[in-house]
Length: 102
Image (cartoon, rainbow, N blue to C red; front, side, top):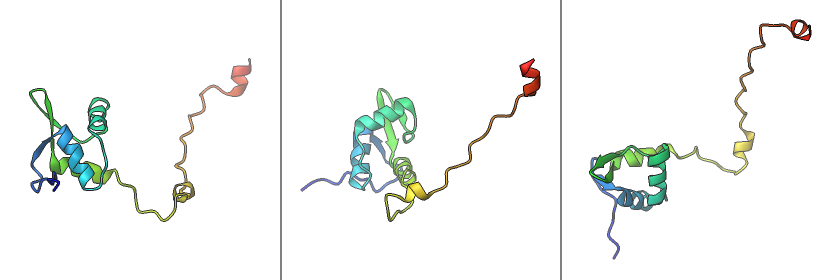
């Protein structure tokens, strides 16, 4: 029988490997290496250092994963139907085109 790795206490501190295992078990498949990369580059769940180990608070890691979920979809083309945000145009320079031509 496989041991459940998901803590009941949201304040439980987990190693990077156990955090990846617990997130995967609750439906957010992620690898330890991905968490390590995100710790380096940013964009991952918050963590603390204990000596040389990274420790993740379970509640923070789970909240991070839930926030990464998209809205429910019925079709893969739904992203195509969403309007694209307007692009910011750069301000026209203060010199007119006539001034630039001279």
